Every structure is written in C-alpha cells, then in structure tokens.
Image (cartoon, rainbow, N blue to C red; front, side):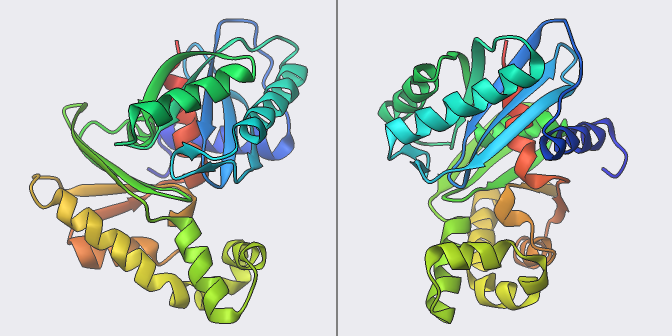
Length: 272
C-alpha cells in the first residue's frame, strides 16, 4: 500500500490535521464524524473523496460505542465543527457517522442524536470496519478496527460484508494493564502508551491484550476463506502488533498507514 491512492489520501489528511489547515475547494463536500472512544474526529472530503480538512480531539464521552456523557460529546463535535467551518469558510450541515458492529439500536440512536445536537444532520450510519474498508479500497479480506474500547471486524467478499462482529477489548484495556503494572494513573499510562520511546517496554506489558484480540479475530475468520487482515485503529500502531496477529491467525497482515485516520476518512467517504 506504500504509494497507493489510498495511502496518499491518508497522508494528505494527516497533513491537514497536523497543520490545522485545509485545501481550497468550492464544490460539494462530504463530512464524517467518528465518535471514537479515545478521540472524536471530523473529516471533510471533496466530491472525489480527496481530503480537504480534518480535526480530532481526545474525549472520554463515548465508551465502547456508547455515549456515556451526551452533553460533553455533543460539545466536542460542535467545537470541532465550528473550527472546520472557520478554516473552510463555509458551513457544515450534513454528515455521516459510525458505530461499532453489533451495538444495540438504542445506542445507535443516541450517537445520531449526539451528532445532530451539534448541528449536523446525519445522512448515513456505517459500521466502523466497513468505513475503514472503503478508505482502504478493500473488496476482499477482513478489516480489523482496534479502537479505544472495542475490536471490530468486517469480512468482505466482492465488496459485500459477509460477517461482522465486535468485542469490548481495545486500547483502553492496554492502558489499564500499563497503569496496573507500573502503578500509574490512567492518564499517565495513556501518555506512556503513546510515547515512541517507551514502545518496547509498553508492548511487553500489553502483548497479552494484543494476543487476546488476535485470538478473537482468529475465531472470527476461521470459517471464511480469506488471505489478508487489514489492521486499523490507534491501538494497532505498535510495530509488533501485526506480528502477533500473523502468528495467531496464520494470515497475511497489513498495518494500514495513518491507522487513526482510516475510519474517519471512510466515514466521510460514505456521506452523501
């Protein structure tokens, strides 16, 4: 995937996010809201699905696909929306959003209400791994989305989802393991988890969590003739993460570039 159009799109999005800038564009736009467990993100793409702006903010208002603090989550989305509107010089009125596979309809409705309370009419709701598959242009294989609260999977055949599942094990569980092992607060452990200089020590601690995730995925894919797993989501960022999945599943494993941005980009691409 080194220089594929999908990688170039993700690199462009990462650039807009890091620079807090946007591409000049006057045509129709599409907006995606990713109500993640660790971060809430908004992404804007043009009619050809090229990223023109993006923004994210840490938030604990959504947990395992459930909005646990409606007001806080809605305020974050509203602030991010306002920031992007100022950058783009135009209003954002409609958006797609996403849910982990398998959450209850009532929880889906709360996520929609939260986004709409921030001033965006929700035009589409998509499963997170399905959004990631679109962003990576995957028609066959399995997309594993390792988020803060959950690990979700969608198995695709000829572009159609033939299986999806979700398990409440994710990056937050890794953070809890680090905190417990080293006597740190959750916030300190989260900061350490994200620091590149601590990656080797941290992964030694959280490897059992990664192995549990990989075992779940191995069970899910055992009944389907797939060759490749695609890993997205922030918790999949560790260099050794893919190797754990290779060893456990026996499949070819591809770590997506810019793993935190794959799902938000795919959500925006699903908007209409």
